[in-house]
Amino acid sequence: MNFLSWNCQGLGQPVTVQHLQEVTRSHGPLVVFLSETHQSGHYVDKVRKQLGYYKGVNVNPIDTSGGLSLWWKPAVMVDVILSSSFFIDTIVTFKDTGIQFRISWLYGPPYYSDKASFWDSWNNQNWNDSMPWLVMGDLNELLWSCEKEGGAPWNINRNRFLKDFMDSNNLIDVGYHGSSFTWYRSSFGEITLKERLDRGLINEDWLLLWPDSCVTHLALIGSDHCPLLFGTNPVLEKRKKPFKFEAFWADDTECHSVILDSWRCTDHPCNLALWRQNLSSCQNQLSKWSHNRFSANRALICDLLSELESDLLSSSPDVTRRNAITRKLDSLWSIEEKIWHQKSRINWLQAGDKNTHFFHLTTLHRRQRNRILKIANENGDWIVGERAIRCEFETQFKKVYSSSSVRNWGDSLSVVTSVVSPVMNATLTAPFSLDEVKAAAFQMGALKSPGTLRVVC
Image 1 (cartoon, rainbow, N blue to C red):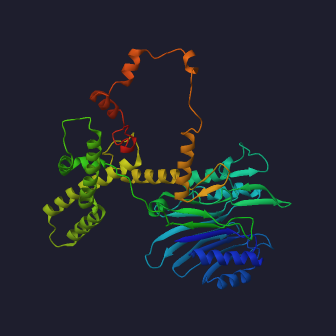
Image 2 (tube, helix red, strand yellow; image 1 turned 135 degrees about the horizontal axis):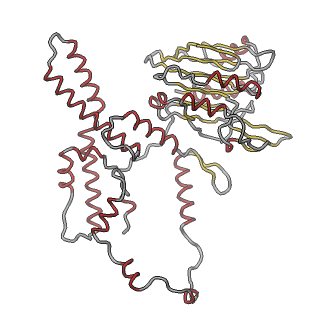
Image 3 (cartoon, rainbow, N blue to C red; image 1 turned 120 degrees about the horizontal axis):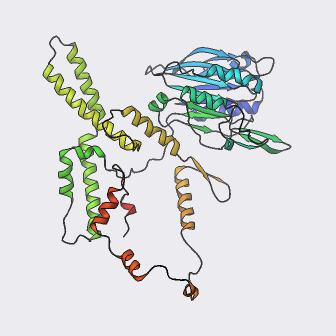
């Protein structure tokens, strides 16, 4: 599903309406939020119907200043909790599934004198801890100095209204695709100031329900603000997942047999080719075995819980059967916990904490933080798209770790004093012993592995 938020700087210009029509036609947002419409509700409703949105609510501008409008499609039901000249707070419900979530559409006060009272009123507003919550709009606030380019220098002593708001409500910045800034000020045909004033924020419940949520900064046309397109299911390039040994496999008695059956022994322990072949065979067999044995874990958990509920409704509950189901559930939950523990990469918690929710959130937070959406090349041009970014990384690494000049040192090294003695050199070039390999392996984290690509041949 997609949502659109745009400070349109007035709907009176034909180019603004045309751009809005193109965006809604191309991306089909279920809900559209417009700030600074500068137009009466009658005119805005006319544009809304023209663009195919059957319902909406308006906050009229004061004279020709401000103005908010919220539109939605028939697939959702929108209940307005509260509204003012700076926000429209809503509860949105999908009519087909009944899924309910909160979206607060904000237009942050542009003048400093109004900021303190506005943001103070929004602190500690996460009144329903179990409901997914999205905050979106032109917040007119910056988080960090890198979100501004040009104009007066960043004042490190200024009030951090947005950061305080996010901290008090446990909100996360979704990040973005596209340009780094959403607002541009131009003077005499040149851009003099760029800032990221528009953004989307979500709470942990939203992240759990839609972990791939992201914001895209669309083209700057008809306004000095970019439209923000929020998507919960962006189109991502599918790629083959690398093999990872799952920690919970080791608890299954069949795992040892699978490894033994796929590993060929040899009289020559240094046969690296056979060792690689064994690793590859072992990976393939373990992947097949895991898919057949554990792929339906979540479905099985749901089925067992349903069985327990049905047993409670029966006239004579079977205690023996209930105990067996409970033991099976405990085993499946333990597997789920270890899966998310391993993915979360939290080293200071050991298996057995029974905190799958924490591990899950940690993993999702890390994925949001590590997602590379774009990079700049040597010419300053922005590279977007997973494949293009990967190629740019490969190109840069090849440049860094390769040389085009002739490496003929001649007699230059003859004047350099030798520091490594023959005895030291013999020790450094000696073959690795099994004890050294074991010591190095055991220094790694219990759930970490260097992978086959890091093996030195």
